[in-house]
Image (tube, rainbow, N blue to C red):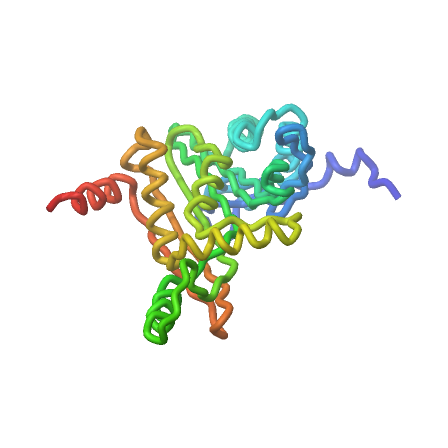
Length: 289
């Protein structure tokens, strides 16, 4: 049954009513929209959140207008970054009573064949206000391997004590989830560059398609490059500063690792969050004698 069009015009628009309690709302919109987006020749299904602010004198937002915007922009956007920026800008055009808009997309990005068909997860968002306040956020999450240097040193000491020696002492390894999250006023940082930093900071990468020689290579690489979860978080921060020397001091960074421990019944978690300017000062201070 189709609702009669003439009755729609007669019905009161509840959304435009004055609310019982007149508070401004920061975010109103749809969470978890499934939107197909083109990324590097692939059509990926993105998990999209779309929000606009709501003034204190309006009861509700026009949700269908919001949703229409992101599906329309997805047809022409050439990148994830362009998708969120153009969507947020368009929302302010079609929702005139809102003074701010935010759009985010989360999607798994395929890696190339050299990475044996692996992937990493990225979340990209853009916040824009009518006062021209902007926040562009890029977050990547990638799985790698960490090998424990502490246990390796104990095994090395034990072998030396009993007269044995080896150039690659054993230790426990585990899959570790690294996250690098950057928010800044300027353009988004490349999610591929951030994913490369996370992967390089691990003891070794993980791969999807491997045969025994490749598996042995990954294990040997991790044993030659043992790292604590703390080491990985610090290395991600260092590589970020090294590879993006022009990133502004007021950019905000979150670097974290969750180590899915193989010898414990719990995980290990490490995190550092700070403004880039503070990280630069810490790094310079550590170089002084």
